[in-house]
View 1 (cartoon, rainbow, N blue to C red):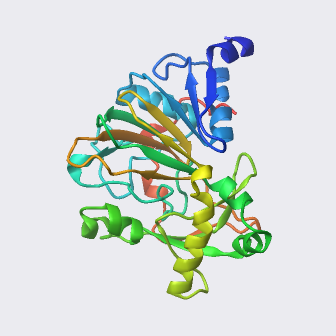
View 2 (view 1 turned 60 degrees about the vertical axis):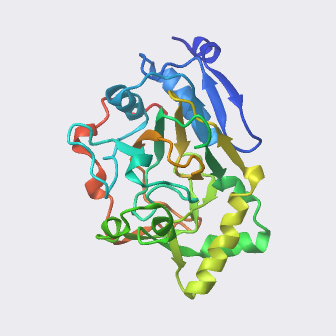
Length: 305
C-alpha cells in the first residue's frame, strides 16, 4: 500500500480544538504495513489521543497491533495479570478499582509508559466517559513567569498518593511496595521535542517546597492543563480503541455509572526516562520500571517512525 493509498483509506477527524481525533478506515486487527502504522503514529503525536470505533480485538490482536509502536510492558507493576496475558491490565468495575482522578499513567516509575492502548469490552449504556487533557497546551498557556518557575521544578511521584486514596479499593495492597520517582515538572517529548507538564494524581510533592506549598503549586500548574478548552471527552461504545500519548496527556475516567458493569483492557508501550528542559533526567527514588518490561513481548520489528 503506497502513501496515497494509506492517506485515502485513513480518515482523520479532529474532535476538539486542542486534543483528540477519530480515525476511520483502519482495522487494528488486520494486516497493516509500516506506512499505515507511521500515519497512525503521526496522528497520535499530533492529536495526543486518537480513537478507532468498531474494532474487533482479542488479547492477541490487541498486543500484535500495539507492539508495532514499541516494546510492550507487562500490564501493571503492582496488579498481577494472567500468566498467558502478561501485557494486559484489565480495568473492571466489579473489582472496585477506578481511575476517576486526573493522572498520567504510572508516573511513580522512573520510566512511565510512552503510549497506552485501551479497548472497550463492556460499556455502560449511560456514563463511563473518559476525558483527556493536553499537557503540552497546558504548559504553553502558562504565564511567562510561571512557566520559568515550572521549568526548574522537580516533582516526586508515588503510588502512595491522592490518586490511590481516591480510586483504589485495596489501598493497603496497592502500597505494600512503595514506588517513588523524581521527575521534572516539565518534560521534553522524546520524539517531538515539545515541552509538557508532567503532573497528575501521583504527583505528591515538589522538591524543596513544604507539603502545603507543593499541593498548591501542583494544583495551580495542573489547572492549566485540565481547563475544559484543553480537553476532549470520549463517549465509549463497546469495540472502541483509544490510544494516547502518555508523555503529553492526563486523563480522567468518569465514575457516573453506579453499579453498572464497565470493563476496559489496556496494554502499554515502554517509555523513556523523562528529561526536563534543563537536560536533567528523572530518577528512581524507590523501585524502578525494569521488572515491568516483559521479555515475552519483544516487538517482532522495529517501530515505524
